[in-house]
Length: 349
Image 1 (cartoon, rainbow, N blue to C red):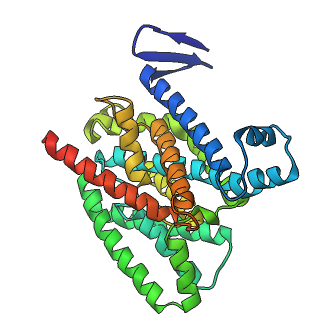
Image 2: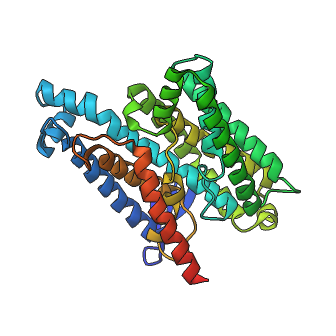
Image 3: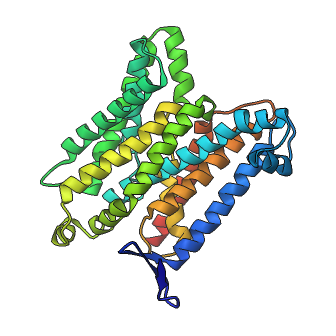
């Protein structure tokens, strides 16, 4: 591996016959976000009714510690913290993909209906009396992909423009939201309660299996990241320019849509629909990397982890003796972010 051009803003890393150009500030932002995630994870492990200190947490993670501390860290709090980090990364990546495809900061899976499609798939599964994590993941993916296929088909007019995709997606989201409400009214009381608890969005439902599955999906996405990011960059230049640069435009868009829906569906299947993380993380990451930069998958993923982990800490500990669903906290944070974004964009115009 060699690093060239040390005095320029970009760093060129060469390894195994390939080279990658990385912005120096992007590396510093990613490193800082990793430090924040580590600090938040350690802090979150110490919070709760069973008192435990950071040195005790480090001792447990090193293979030591007494049985009580190991149970608290490894079985009670650890899986939930890992779920927040992994699912936050997946939501951030999904948001970056759709905002890059639509070239619009409102292009998020929870705005354009793909979250609602996953929600519908899981509610239908619950109404059919089917249980189990595998069935939930399958239903969420089928629902999300079906919603994406309908939105893509309705938005297609000799290609798909970003604004048309958002408008059709908002209409689909409203339709599916009404359908989900109707399902909840018609369902058995117990099923309706299960759907309502799941629909609020909570990491309390995460366990070792769901976190491991999410981590596997995240690892696969990381492997596909260089190719996906390169195509996203070229698609941001416009369909004609991307085609001139050798990118199969529509095939690349379908591939990226499927990737974005799958990452969202994995989170929705476990924790329910968690809004606004996918919307806010890519834009916060872009602003941290500086003006003039485009949406970046890595910074979006790391910011998503910070946002979801912070929101879950607030949900668990902000009000004593009250556990809030993390989805309610992200909606409040996201609402404030959306207002701020509208004010900033309004002043810019």
